[in-house]
Image (tube, rainbow, N blue to C red; front, top):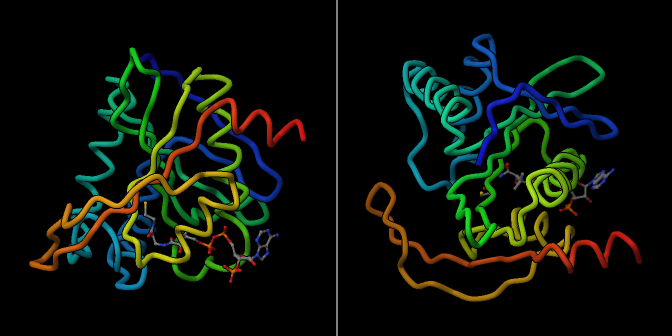
Length: 187
Ligand SMILES: CC(C)(COP(=O)(O)OP(=O)(O)OC[C@H]1O[C@@H](n2cnc3c(N)ncnc32)[C@H](O)[C@@H]1OP(=O)(O)O)[C@@H](O)C(=O)NCCC(=O)NCCS
């Protein structure tokens, strides 16, 4: 899948855009926050160098098309408030996984709902995907709500799929089909 084209995705209060070097401190702030990382698939960052490595991997992914991570920028003040990612593309099946996070200060204001809505639309309409998947911790209520608000269905429970910092956790697997999303949009 070719993703190597600089692009932005507009929503009402936020814009999704490529990450740039000056985003590294905000990335670090988000990825080192214990609340944000509580159910993440890796432990909180403790060093800015880890955020730089993440940034560099995202830049590599822009070149290779392996994954697409976009920053979520708030329009009113151009602050980077979070990220969303498409990864694990399966070209023939036209599916990918979706991941997302907001900096703690920006929770509870509907920003991710807007950002993910626009990102999902891009995935289905521009990238022509047929199915999106999300792998979340079943205890992550805020994340489940964000998915369900967009029409994702909980499809199953995968037991003890993760061990992060010695803590074993399950996966709740969510899925959204393009045809379901189109029906909701047209309803
Ligand atoms: C998952 C996560 C992004 C959800 O953030 P969020 O702010 O709750 O999500 P939304 O942007 O959809 O906002 C919805 C909340 O804002 C409220 N809200 C306020 N104004 C709103 C608006 N204009 N539109 C929609 N919701 C609005 C909603 O009522 C809702 O609050 P509630 O859940 O208490 O009812 C956040 O909890 C997070 O970053 N978690 C850590 C990372 C993570 O676990 N990611 C998932 C694993 S991939």
